[in-house]
Image (tube, rainbow over all chains, first blue to last red; front, side):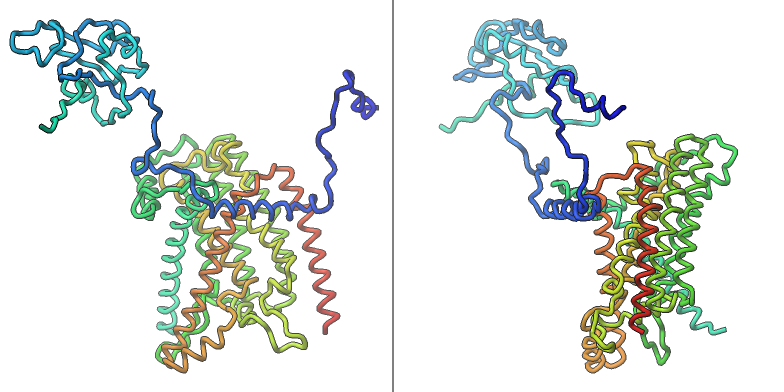
Length: 173
Length: 360
């Protein structure tokens, strides 16, 4: 009685997909095991797909969001004017800054009259979302391809201007 | 009392013990490397050159972990469980013929710790005794899952011992002796020219079915995939060694690799001729002719090297099967042990008996 119920398909779309009866060689299991062992042995001699970090690295895409950098313009003056929009946009509240006024002889150092005397990003809070890069009106802060290096202590992770500002390249005269 | 003989045997036991420990240690490393290579990844390669100091790192890790004993009434049993397991694993290495006979200062030294007449029975006895280590460990852990794992382990080991013994009976019918040294000596060279029809002298060619059954049972006895239900992580957390930590856990895991090594050795000695290899007479005569006594000792050393090559191949075979075959379910395991292997081995005995009668 039970087998009659199993053969009825109420919607007419039932498909029996696997043949449950095993052949004799399948019932032995040994030929299938030997075939499987051949496959495993073939994989033993294949090339490995592991990337041995840090000796080998994979390339990042151009839009990779890594470490921050504060840009300078063509003449070497810092772009950042300490407007605070990046600190406002940051969802993790990782950016803090202190503004100050440009003095008489510092025109080559800073673009506008207001500049950031202290600019700090707490890398432990930062989530590398890139909202600060989107918010900056002066195109001053960008997220580069470099990674933030790891450490055993928390103290070194508040990056100040010494680590964030783009270094001045010495142009050959 | 022949003190020199005793001293030589003691020295051989020490050397065998050291080699067993070394090979079991590097089997753990080889397992991870072989597993990695079969899965298209390199395995551990950071500790030392190519990862060669990885077992040292693992051993140090085991030593420096906290060694706690759960609140059970059976503290004594909890502590001696892994000890029992490793003792029985190591004791089987005493009766295995590692090489031929060397000559030192006119004294013939067989490269074997002891040569008893019932060596094969001794090995089976020791293997059966190893079940105690698992049962005691699982029971003394005071943990239902450990107990379940231990019960599964012991039932599995007992079931497959029957088939193992029955398959060996056919081999004993052929060789007529239980001593492993006589079995190795009967498999001299590679081809046996002395009969009516020249045939291979290794027993694997005379008893392929017994070899297959013994191999499957050896996998089950050492709790090795596809029969590693007692200790699989997915189903029973850790099985019988869930509650163990630090060196006791290290003993359980290590004893498993020692068991694997000893099983490979027993298979090599019984079925694959032990220290014999094709062309061994030629090598022996050439070396003795060139270097005399030292030459014949060197020829025995070559035999020992060949035995270790076979052992390494079988250890690799264990790992190869582990990463190929999925695990058996408990009822499938029991089905295989009782309903398929035992009738097959009895059939093998009947066929062997018939063949012996016909060729007499």
